[in-house]
Length: 544
Image (cartoon, rainbow, N blue to C red; front, side, top):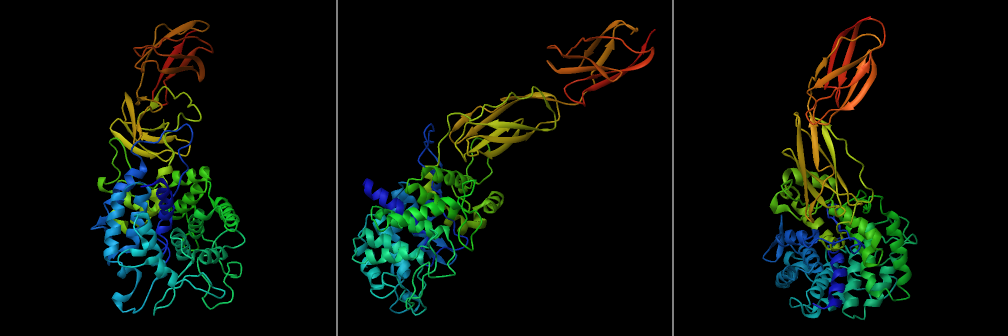
């Protein structure tokens, strides 16, 4: 496939999931990260490859089967996502299957909607044909470009606006309009200029594009002329992607800049985006689509941050950690709640939502940053000992931002994700016994050295304390302590005051000395090891 076609269809993939009826509230939107930043190395089998394998497995005879049969629109989403990451086999499978059942998608003839033509579906099918290197003017026995031209308004205030021809009414929106602009422009249609101008009118002064179009017969057709126009991340990002092939146009360029500035201003600190009125919370759909648009437009730093956030929703594991079913690996959850659900119950619990999230999020994972060269801040020296039965914090890295890593120690396993710096922290509970445990960490990009690599745990104990001579006021006395761990720090207190500090030898023995002070009589001598539960208290009689 030619480079130009790959770039063109990469943009088309972004457009795919969003037309023909618009986005559903559960329909996820992908992320795009910047090209691998300087100083990183992408994994040879990265998150995009895993996602492509999972999505390909969702096809049955070339189509995604939903609750009510074949889902043509979602099937196109899958095909365009696969094409964007270079998995051409799935693209051709969907193209073949859709061509064989095209009428059922672009018209309602099959259920009595005589003479109907659905504008968004027609544009989406045309984009698939272009991505599959088929002729959209002769696809599935139809001229999709001519059909799209026929549903594009020719004159009046709504000139260039697409319109559904249906007995059920017109459901065209800005998502479909953006898709139509991309298809008409790519095909060199004479209707492309008018469709583009109409799309630009759907952008408000703030920079965002609205979702709903004005009625065809309305005099006012602009976003600024609609007082109830709500900002919509998905629509704005899709408009950007559809307009990028015309970025050199003096008419289009300022609109692209305003839209990109608006998108960047709405990105959250963690890299995520919310959607429109019904999808304001952070989600893979909106984050992915916005990140994709920013990345394609060259704003790669913001795109990379979005990609890292989406990668955190992808089902992946390494080493011996298996939080997900093997058949689910590579899928992308819609949001954090969805990830919790599929982790506990598997993808089948939310299959439709996860399919839509994965189809729209997959392409941007090509830009997910690779493993960083080194942790940005050198870790501090770890404590020499840890109390048995407690949790120990293990620092892991360098990793790829958002990458999962499996940590094993003392038979316990934890999978965690790297943050945006390429570092991760895992808390693992130590067994309730004294021992030294090796820590191992494995990520998809390879093994790494955890910090610390070995953990020494100390359980509760009572050291043996012996005073070799009778304590006498004003004299120095030696104390013998045994039962400590090798090289364990210890403290000796006499009458509540610290009189010696030291470290046991390799055999766990310590022989501190101290000068006896105070009056004659009974006094308490306390030896404390590394922790309070490793203490021994003895009473001695001080002689005059």
